[in-house]
Each structure stands twice: as C-alpha cells, then as structure tokens.
Length: 151
Image (cartoon, rainbow, N blue to C red):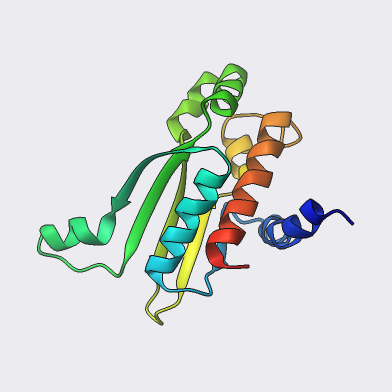
C-alpha cells in the first residue's frame, strides 16, 4: 500500500461513517485542545495549497455582544479552480462556497471538527456525488479534518 493511501485511511473512515449514518454533517473528535485543533486545521489547509479566507471567532463575537458561547471558530477556505468547476456545474452552489469547517468545544470540553458532507452538498445542488469535483472535495475535506483532529 502506498504511503499516500495509508494517510488517507483515517480520512476515508470519517467520510464512510458519515455516509453510513446518512448525516449531512461530518464530525471528528479532536485529540487536541481548541487552539491545537485550529492550528492543525490551518496547517492542513495551507499544506494543500488552499487559501484561508477568514477565521471567524463566534465565541469572541458572542463575548463582545455580552453573551457566552463555548469556544467556536469557523475557518473559511477554498480552491478557486475546484470551486469554479463546481459552480460551472451549478452556479447556485456558490451559496455554500468557499468551504467552511467549524471547530468547537462541547459541554464536556471535547473538541470537534465538522463540515458539510459532500453528499449533502451534491444533493443540495443536484450534482452527482460521483462527479470529479465532488469526489475531489470529499477527499480533501476528509483528509483535512482528520489531520486537524490529530488522526
């Protein structure tokens, strides 16, 4: 088995678990802290030559509004070439592009990474789940989430 294939095994397990459960959201529990997970997520994105467009600190915004929210950060990133190919298939898919991954801490202090399952994205915009751009998106998101979660 190639080294690249071995690296994708945890990522594929995440995607398969989500598909098997019919979930629209793929979630992976992180082995690290909130900060470690966000840093790993950012590194995983940059290592794949993707562009981070924004990091939104939802919990920080809540604090500024005088409210509380457990640590929650949204990382928005993309690949213009892949996103364009998807929008060429259905331009309205631009509503959910660029891609987003959420990192959050639950009430038990566990840290999670989550994103919209490519199957749900494909259904939403009437794209075939076997379309090349959707498969590419799925593989990349699964690998990024696995790396961010420390798997």
